[in-house]
Image (cartoon, rainbow, N blue to C red; front, side, top):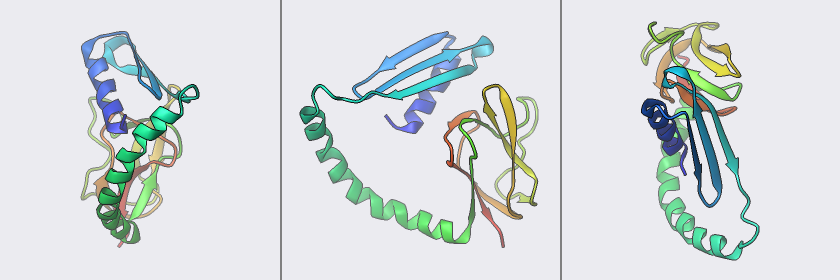
Length: 165
């Protein structure tokens, strides 16, 4: 299951009004609990090792990634390699939920094309009910916002690309 699929599932559950949804697949177990207002509060994602029958999953999983990965990898890596050399990537310093604005009724901190200075607030990451402001490490122009508002974020996951020139 891709990260984008998980994010879409969280949004769907939050909008549906369900209080808890559990999903178990071969190697992933996901539990999504929502609080008041339909906002997803807690998401648990746990990898379950496939110990009892390792031969079948390995045989079934091996051909698909081997065929798909070489075709997609060179094209996908060519563009980011150029971006990484020209732009500074702002990464998440923690695990949590990414928010582009200070509250639902306020405007976003920054848009693509905005100029930011060192110390300007780019976004907020909520971790365990604490809202942490993420500040710019460089001065420059925002080239790309890499996540949607209210998306789950992992440690060291890229958030923004900034052109320092």
